[in-house]
Image: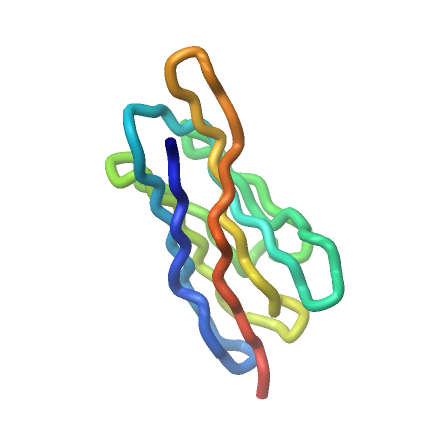
Length: 119
């Protein structure tokens, strides 16, 4: 059993910043890759950023240079620093983790946190 909980969403003006956090909890498990996805209003969920267990990051072209993904393995946590926010960055942001335990391995999702960008 693994649970992911996101936090840090809120209302910001264009050009502002937010830092999202996600922490995994549960019984004995190992986390491999972690990432962030978002769902803008009226659109499908889309990839934002991922980071491997070794700290290698990958970003969607739309956020490169503005967002930074990082992780803190001791806390089973992943973060997303969002700078220079744009109107099109608004949406529900979801945390994802590739989790392994025993012989099993599966992807887990958080419930999401709302990010609103408005002037």
